[in-house]
Each structure stands twice: as C-alpha cells, then as structure tokens.
Image (cartoon, rainbow, N blue to C red; front, side, top):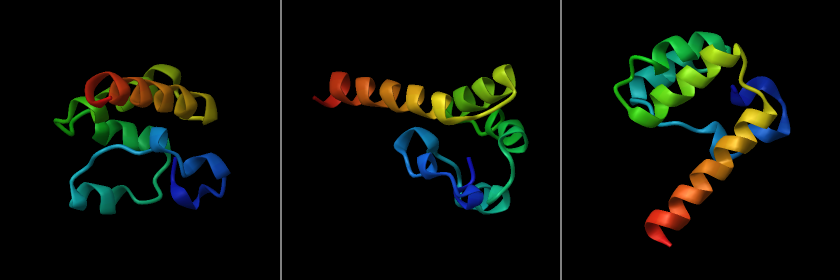
Length: 81
C-alpha cells in the first residue's frame, strides 16, 4: 500500500517488503496490482510471495497487512528469539 494512500495501517512492518533502490523508486505510489507485477520478478522470496498474494486476491488491504505482520512476528521470534 503506498504511503501516500493516507490510511493509518500503511506504517506497519507487514506493509514493507525488500526491493532494490531503483525498483523502489520507480514504483513509488503505484497501486498494489501494478507493484505485484514487479514483485513477482524481484528475485527475492518474501517480495515474490507478497506479489503472489496481491495477484491471488486482487487487492492488498488492512487484513492482508495485519496477517503478514503476524507472519513476520512469528518468523522473527522463532528464528531470532
């Protein structure tokens, strides 16, 4: 979800994904479906999974971001806790 969307849940770890600086800049405020196309070819597993989620559900919303936040939290606690 673009930061410029104005919704409060964009400032959440579940809404972040890794991208190269150039790709990140080029996608800036693009809507999620446009970003998904690039995410799928990013070569980064976690970013590719976000692209797949967006394509499968044809959206990226608060519930998906909250779910991803929980997945990241679980991973961090299991791997680094």
